[in-house]
Image 1 (tube, rainbow, N blue to C red):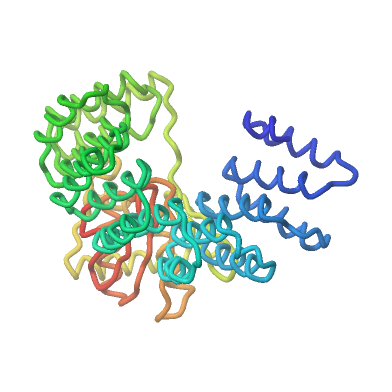
Image 2: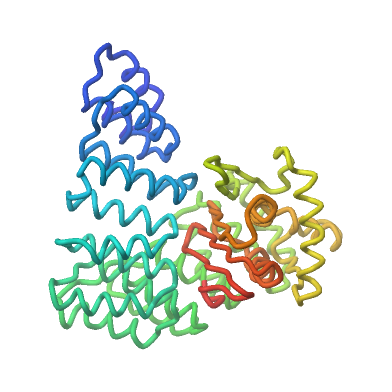
Length: 433
């Protein structure tokens, strides 16, 4: 089973598992790990529940598999992290350092920093991985001050490794802490003797780029002692999304297409940047090039959990039983946020249609549909939590800020890059994502 799962052949692994007459604990653990590795968390959880129904007691290996699946899956929720944590406590496996660290990671990635920090503070023992996960968690949520506070505490107890520095530098980038980022980057070599990897250089390019220092970022890449890879050029192209620059955009895109011509996200990002620069023909040509090369766009979707059930929304989704109500409420909500100052950004809409159609297509983005569904079906004082499998689009980010303001609701959105905490018209990222 392990061989099949490592080769991505999950169906064959499951057939082998089903064919075992008397399954031992190792068989169950191996299949759960296979599902978790393949991002099939729901299947992993089904097996985990079946184990308990059959009175097969999971061990640390089993629990680590399902917990890691919870951390990495787009369809796992905070409730799943709580269920796994509860089982770890009841089975006393929470006393295992690796299990406890994995539970912290699942809370971090499911958006509950408070739960993660509570466990972290109560731990009798912490290793480098534990510290790095907590530091990374604060970075993902845009809490740069806490990142530096934890990092300084950690340095008094143990030597950070190159992974820890990736977390710290990434956090500095997301929080806009330029001076602190440079200080950490320089100390990595001078104070700790750690040789910078491509991930560290990518973080520094991201740090400079997000701050609008695109020329400095380009010069930084030119002076790198190692050949820049996709992560470095991707950071530069991502910065051009925030601060459009035709020359640097083309430099980054050309380098990326040479290194990784099948990455659909880069084509979409480049097309959107061209659109924001008013280069509509160039944007269209990128879409054409994408089709010619046979590059398939990853379908975007947003997931929300209500009453222990997951609901998945696609762009323009009408499959939900409440679709009519959702679209009526969405129309009213869009009118309300327009009155509050929201202006639709058609750079993120279809470009070969009339402007009115462009605006309507923006309304049907999966993020907005999931949020409205949450508004309809939850109590006024509750927090709405949604998960987007790709980076949230700029228009949906702006709209969600206004939605949080006019509805007086807190909205937590996890996208493929970080967490966004919306409240009273503001986002925790400070529009710095």
